[in-house]
Length: 214
Image (tube, rainbow, N blue to C red; front, top):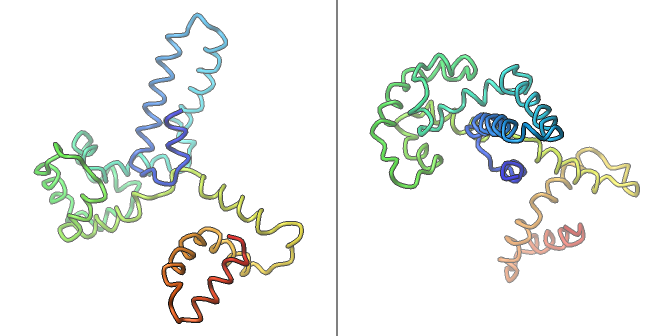
């Protein structure tokens, strides 16, 4: 249940996914042994175990090799993983252009104080100048989508926008309404902060947002 809630958000880092699936696999194997005298539960554990096996071992999950390799971006994990860059560059090609920074990255990890509360984003921002090529990889790879939640939200919003009563809109109009649907509250807040402004354009935009019922 905890993982289910975790992956309903859009804030899960790519470095977490492989380990979470691995822990889930180990947990369900342990539970299968614990409930071995309850046939119905064993059947459920076997079904879930087969699915996880396909993801982790048979590599039937898209990008599973990428998620496994991306763990090098978390210095806490890399301390206990192989330091051979080739293991990771096989699945993240951009690493081939950052090999000159790899040894420095390893040294930074060795010297880093992990006793304090660790923030992976702060770590990379702190080392942006020292290892810029690796930072560029971290900038996109850490936030590689780990689930389809955002896609499902978008589809739901599109279904609301493109209703039976409004089925002849241009795709550009739909895209703009979708943008407003996602960002309308933020835009409204910004505009309300300037409600005393004499800028008539801002006032017109506020009216437009209210008319769209965002």
